[in-house]
Length: 147
Image (tube, rainbow, N blue to C red; front, side):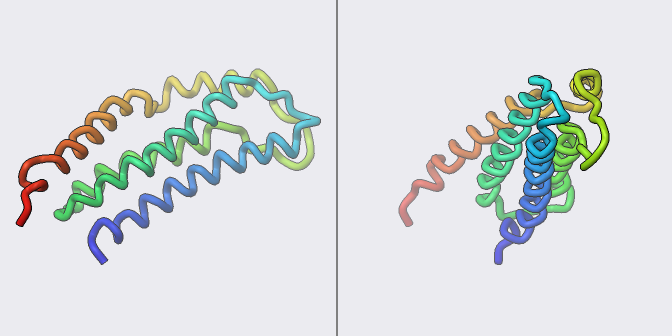
């Protein structure tokens, strides 16, 4: 087993938990649909977060070409997944089985809290550059040389 296979397990678990958290929020909204009026910015944020989770998981697959790993290098990659999980816990409220649910006011408060939490949107250009660089590194002459 190479280093990437070993290290990617933890990254996949964290991203899987983030996806599960968002999907459980959608499940809670569906189960409580008679008591809850949904607010579209919360739903849009949840969908965007699902896309970001999957995109991060997909982008990290390019790291398989990296054979030298240090703890600091892995910590930087890990630091990209932890905020996704934390944001997943904030995106949709936990809806109990009984009682009333905070409606639009709570959703506005949640959407307002996005401004205080570091957003992944500002990291997308960096990820795109990293993906392009990894792609061109694979096409570099030393990789295309026939031995």
